[in-house]
Length: 350
Image (tube, rainbow, N blue to C red; front, side):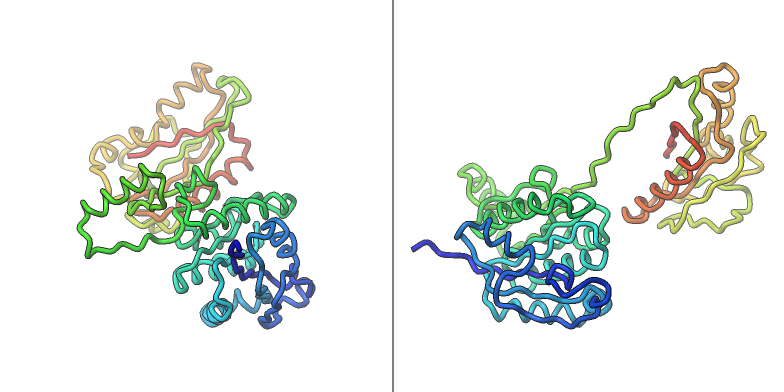
């Protein structure tokens, strides 16, 4: 008789059928059967797996008490001795996504069993847990729920069968997935040969050096001639007005700022300084236009090569700044630029 895998499924109060915001504070409960999207999940498993328990909890209850509720979920999962844990999917629902990511990561790390969820790239749960567990990519909303459930089933069965899982870009999950456990009592050359042979014979293995899986950004296309385009200047080189009026830091940036260049044909060295410790900025101090090329842009405007130059430039210090901050800076700058009708940007670095 073929073994039927035991699955524990986590969902929120909405998908559990208990209501929306009015029941978001409900306590955790367990039903020893598939519920909500779990009904379709079990159907898609086609006899290969069964959902032995569905854990249901209010979004507010778990999101506001992660430190106590997540261990409670893990203990509950453990009682059912499952082969697999599935969270959600949570798509772009913030609190639900946090719960799906936190519980999936905790189960994978604590119970050492296959665990997977599915979230949108911009869900806060994705940013926090994408390097601690498998989080499959989804769209912004649950419109394609059935397709995502199908992918969860396919991926889950590969996990429990021990099939090799490739990197996130190839397999369609965010980040690097769960942390790789390394037995350092085995010398590195032996571990490397073991992985090489496993790969050659198509056996399960995981690299010890997992490459990050960054969000895919489509290449934009300029929809007008450069001679009609409004251009803005952005730099991560830390150029600020003399005196550093906004107290910009030289590393691990906490913000970006914009400064006016209206009416200026070039930037004068006596008016600027650099707040960035990651490069030799002597040449920029000698001529700030080497980093923020206002002088060259004014010439291009006069020659008719570009339409116009935005009246402010944007600046931050990129050195040692975390990816989450970089992403928020980029989104913040982009929002301002779009609001001012900017067509293209020149981003100068160090």
